[in-house]
Image (cartoon, rainbow, N blue to C red):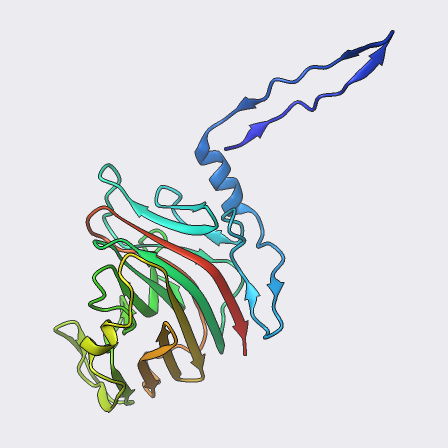
Length: 263
């Protein structure tokens, strides 16, 4: 909330202190818009080269629809309420560049009905506000998909949880929400066994490693999906980073301790 504050000056005149101060207020939306429009805050680097890209207090350095996104209690919060249901997936997008080779670490917590994800090496999808197209680390409240590699508005599922996949440089199509050309050439464990390692409605860690055309998604320190993308027609080697709230029932997702290291 923007607070227009008339600064109070105490003036000593004839032994009296004369003060005056009555702050006024404007809309909550004004504050969030101002935060979103502000430049990215100075990154806080750690000894291992990671930089904090969300300050835990404001939306500085991020841009999204503030009807669904806010900073609260140290977390980046995405929320859909009964009176504000989504017509299309919406993202809050990091304004600090287009990461190429990088590692991203963060923590997330999502309600049971929630559907979210972390997009990277993405591009804006034309005609839809705050929409991204690109790779996504899938996250959902029932943990049916958490950890898989899904290409938003693109080739759809590239690797289900537990799969090590190569995407060859050959034609394919999205069929039954998966890319038909994908070749499963290894196992990281069954999807069900890996699911037991993900906590429901509690904090989990996520670690994304993108080096060249090799993409790895870790949840709670365990590799959940591994993609080598040889598809030169569709793959992206750099692009935008953003976080999603998905179309669906009322839900809430929280992200905190968002740390990025460019490689």
